[in-house]
Image (tube, rainbow, N blue to C red; front, side, top):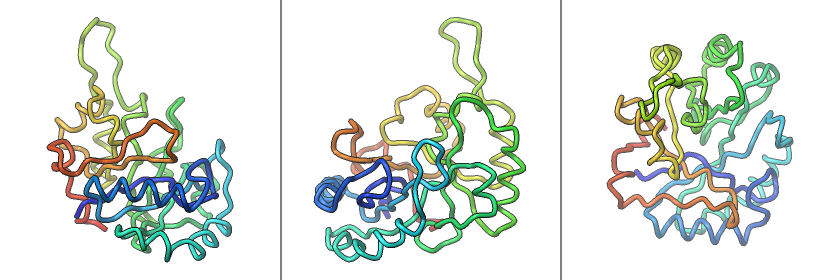
Length: 219
């Protein structure tokens, strides 16, 4: 199944789509690109984009039927920012499965990373890390010009823990993403599409780049 695991198309709840009309226009483009299922993953516990879980659920209750009239199956999830409050707080999993999309800080490695993942796993969640290519602390920096990046040991530890990796469609030609793909460490893809002004493309599932992702084996 062609799945876009990461979008911000639930109207009016975060920094994503402002209204139903814009969401439907984007979903129409996603359908044309071959998408069969799209997850709406509004921010939760994000320090940059405060949201209210009650408002998210209410928006989903109000908009789920018209969104699903687009010809694409649309399901609710969330993008949970990994911070202490999220470890014990209420979250929204992907389509009522046990899969949880988790976002990390991009500025520096959180000192509690491994321990926090373990806490969420003990709560019964299977963890997908959102846009892994953004986390520079997972990649070794080389002092040599034109040399390739290498993976930090923590990447292998996360994979040993069963953590799944999601990369963004627009990052597939990025060097970090290429390294992860070469090591066969990426399980799923998302557009991270917010709105029509964000400059992000929708996934072209007919392309060779997208065909390597089989997204439905764990959802």
